[in-house]
Length: 233
View 1: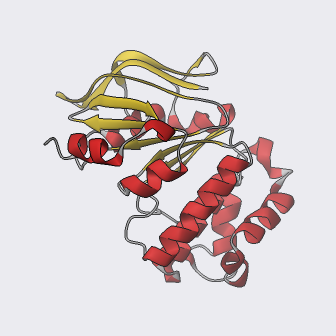
View 2: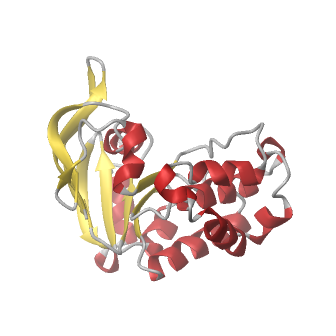
């Protein structure tokens, strides 16, 4: 599905990613973990065309993504749920969801996808006319997830979804991720909650200093070893 080979990227003269190679299999949940500054968000920005590559390649099903502008990612079925929710605060919940299906190819399916979003997150139905800026952090994260699904993407990228959420809402969020995985959705998840991320994943990558230092099926991951590498002990 998604394949990165020898990717280098950064910000101007500052390189952050060093020859990163990884794969995310179709119908699987691939999680990327690592401490702050490891390069995880930079990696997602490179995938989404927000940063140019200094070297390497990015492809989905053999189709090159590098060089494709961010606003063209919907054309190839890729959606991202960004870190920090980034909802449109002055628009209603339903207007935010509609923006997720803005691309002309998705508009005809908007009614059923709205219904699917409300079925997945019933609280959004209750707040459908409410301004997104008045939602709690957990509700805003639900909205960001539901908006990302409105285009029915074949690849969903989720960046730090549990950040700032209560344990109860984290449980609810990971239940949704497990359900989406069970439906055969291809997901790339960046997450700092290592135990929860490994628990829901099929494959785990650990990044340190802009490099992949561990690649392992989730079923074979030792959390003790993972934390040793995570904290560079």
